[in-house]
Image (cartoon, rainbow, N blue to C red; front, side, top):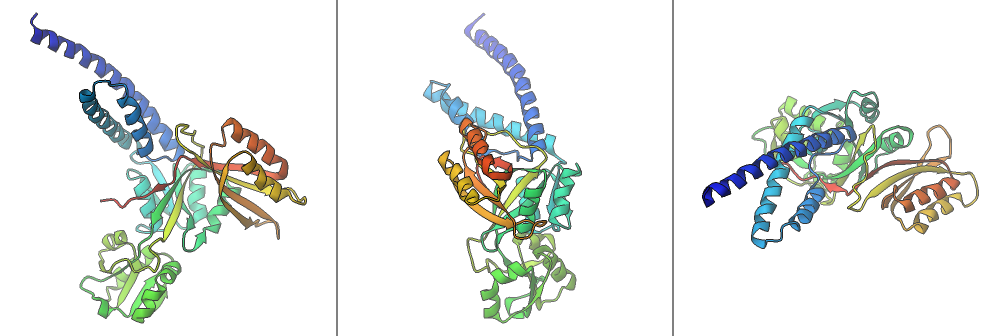
Length: 367
């Protein structure tokens, strides 16, 4: 056997081993896809992939080969993602609104392969997951301009679902109207009250009459149906494309930092990814004793957890009674986290971990 044949023999043997390991790896990928589907997690976890590439590249000592290995592992991950997308295709994703609404846009960006199911209310979308009609729900929890979404907060407190991810969607409002319509033609604008409020300076400058709609997508539907060059909707660019309207003016909202945070709700809580910083969500009521709230809050700091958000909400069934919502950095399932929860429970009538997530993700516009 000459050197060429010997080298080819080595390659054949290596390829045989790689094929066997490939099948083993893809079986694990299948299990991961099932886990993500059950826990409402997206396919792409950029932080996890970067960590794997960095760790695995250290296994290659030859600097020349290392760059080729990094390409190899990136391609392998791309194949794994494609397989996961195929396995998760058809997952049922609940959201509140109609097609083209910002909740629908968020759901599509988080779960591009899912089947996105509209519901008329936050509670019906939430309940669809509880009743196994859908795999998970994408619901807004806060807007940087308008504040918390109280109805969803109440569902988090009283319901049984877990939050396994939080995502930021930058809200950009556009003036959209019938094909061929110009800014000088517009006399009336229609949109959701929040969108109208966020664009009020622009509306005032142009002297538009306003009409309220239940959401921005319904406003776009109305403008498309009327096909009136004097009527425009305030909505997203995706909505304009969906309903056959043209963008007359871009980025008309007053604040360039207008962002809505969406949470993914599922029936089970995902396990932490320990290699990265975690965030957790707590909800509780305190004992009816002097100083109980102050003591409860101090427990979190005493155990070295950084509390980022503290809110109170009135309880629906008890007048002048409140529950509290906290977002904090850290792993509540660590030994220190378990001690913190145990000590916190001393001051709480009700205490629940609503969920946790590795990092807040900014939803980028799809191309």
